[in-house]
Image (cartoon, rainbow, N blue to C red; front, side, top):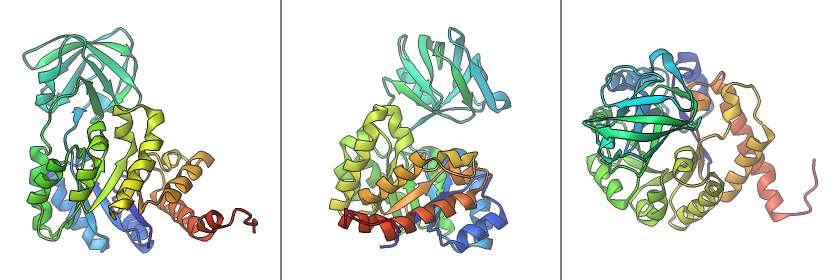
Length: 338
């Protein structure tokens, strides 16, 4: 079995020389993240990638998630105790005014509701809500950039796909795209709904990144062609210290169903800004491979990192080490270092 490498494309990698170098390394899939891609850019990006590569392209839906909108200047600092107005319009926000989407997310906002914004851990608590807006106080401060994920407690009920997702899938089908990823697959019904929209012969990856997805894992695995464990978004809904054990359990479950399973998020996070990974990251990748995954997914590392090609080279070296040393070490505890 060839272990697969999936690369998310973004500003750092949507360049001809990078695309050609990644293709020369036989990466298996180029991922277009619709959460960070304008709808009008989907078709031109697909066309442009195909000018320089025959690597298959995967459209990854936004799915049932809440996100903040555009932040003026690209970054806002939220100070503890500060009041913030939450709105549902599309105008840029900042430290005192933050747009949220989709609009359905406002339906569950009540005094006492909490929101966690982005991985930096900004926590807001609602003090007043109504008429499509709400007022919150910053409980834990931090930095928030544009288009970041938001976790609401209690969570809203959201549609499986956004209108943008449905249009993007139609564009993908018209372009002959045969790989799609469903973000926030919560139930088997979500998989069936999306499957019905895909072109004949399409390959559907269901992303496990919510507590509901973990609870309903068997039905999701059964309906999908493959599953992808997104550890980042999953860590918003389950305790961080539980994520490694959920990963192992989901990998075993997928293997039992004979479904390919991939792991994403923070594999080589330090290489977003550095030329070398940490020992802990190398150890994480090694253990992920030993768990029995079928592939690894690079996200920020190749989308916005300083050197997407070097990141892929590191992943490939880790895979070769696993194939040469890791499997032998499992079989021979007395393995000698050479």
